[in-house]
Amino acid sequence: METLPTKREDISPFVRGTDIEYVQAYYGTRLADIPVNDALKKILQIVNKAYFELGKSPSGSTKEERKKLMMTMAKLILNDARLYFQKITIDEIEMAVKRGIRNEFGEFYGLNVIAVHKFIEGFIESEERKAALERQRRFVELLKPPPEPTAEEIAQKMAEGFEFCRNEYYQTKCIRDYGNVNYHYAVINGWINLTGDEKWDLYHQAEKLVKVEMLQEATTFHQFASWQSQADPADDARVVRKAKDLALKQYFDKLK
Image 1 (cartoon, one colour):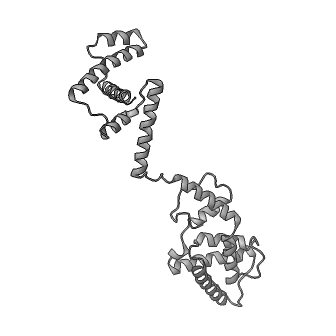
Image 2 (tube, one colour):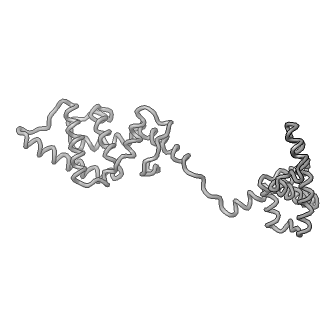
Image 3 (cartoon, one colour):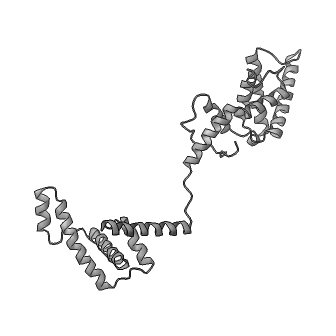
């Protein structure tokens, strides 16, 4: 499951139960990134715990012999894992051994380097692990921001939006141009090129329309009286937006 990033992400809410262990272990520290002495200590802990859970002791007639055997085994396991499982984490090795001694990857005959190798192989190929990491991979993909559109894609979207606005106007006689995007698109393309006098004329027309709209929107007598008494009740930004809509309307009318 190399498609998952090596840096730990938030665990998917769709990964539950024992599956979380697989994902957490995957995001553990890579064995290749741990100093040899620290890795040996951790491998020794894993092997010691495995012997304890099995209720057995390593061979050897003295404590020193058993200690020497354990160190040798830890070194061989470390070298084997670094050679054959270069992306394995120390947490995954621990999880593999824990499940392996419980015969989840088939029967084994004695705890040794080959047995641990088979534990790790079985762990990596586990269908449960693959399913858990696949659910996490999908979650990580959902967290990624969408790719930035290309200039060609932006141009196409703008052209499609402009055409949609134009057709909608022909059908409804209403201009719906949020943020005056289509007006500015027409200006940039040189389709709308107003003189200063034309702009002021549209502005004054827009002032009257906005005043009527605001009076119609009045919900109380107090608002109605307040707006009527004002010399210029229209919000200037609203008037400018309305003037641009009028300019776009005129352009569409000319096209038709």
